Length: 295
Image 1: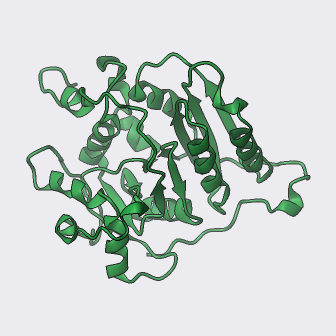
Image 2: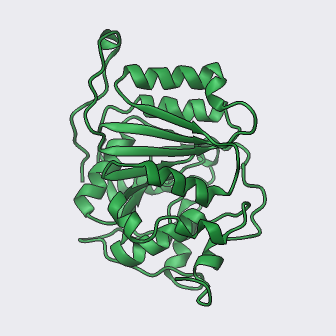
Image 3: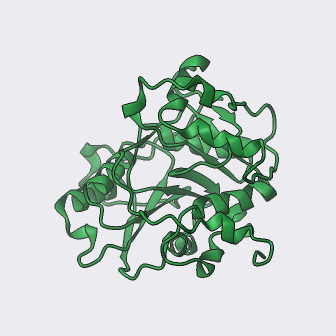
C-alpha cells in the first residue's frame, strides 16, 4: 500500500495570516511528565507532518511548573499553532498512573482517530499519514509504528525477526496472551529489528505493509470508536499509580473485538531516554485479564 493525502500544514509565508481550522481527522494524545528536551523533539516531529489534519492534546503531570513554561516546548507549540494545528496542554500534577492519564486524554478526544504518542518519540515526515492511510484501508481497531532504537542499527537479530508475518487480506480479531504463539511477536520490536525487516522488503518511499503484532508500544493510532467500544483505559482505577503495560492491556481488548496491526517501515524513532516509569512490578495485563477481577 502507498500513503496518499493532501497537505494541511501551512508554510512559513502564511504564518501571519488568520488561522481557520477544519475539524481534525486525528487527535494526537501525548502523556508527559517532567520531560522537556524529549517533548520538544516529539513536537518537532509532529510539526514536520504535512497531513492529515490533526490536533495535539498534551496531558502534563510534571510536578511544579508545567513543561509549557520551558522555551523549547513553548516554541514548538507555537510552530504547530502557526502551521494551523490546535495544541491543548492541560497541567494536572496529581499522578494516578499512565492508564488514568491516557483515559483522561481519550475522554477529551473528538476526532475519528486518536494517536497515542509517547513523549520521547520522533516521527519522520509522512509517518502520520502512513498510519492514517493504513487504518482507513485496513478498517481495523488500531495500527502502530513500533519505536526503533537507532543505536542498534548494527545489532542485527535475525532470530528475533522469525515471527514476522504480513497480513494478507483483512486484519481479523486475535487473542494474545503470554504463552501463545502470538505473544512471541513481541520480539519484533526490539532494538532496530523493523529497520532490518524494511530493508528486506525493499519498499518504495511512501509504501507500507501491515504485519501481525503482539502489541505496539509508543506510537499507536486507534479508531476512537473501537477503542471506546473496548473500554479504553477504564481499568485505571484497579491499578496502583505505578504500573506498566496499560497500553498492552488496552490493545489486547481492541484486538479481540476489532483486530490490530503494525505497519512497516516504522518512522517512529525512540529517543532512548531513561524511562519515567521505573517501578514496573505491577503489569496492567495481569490485573485486567485476571478472570477473577476482569469485566
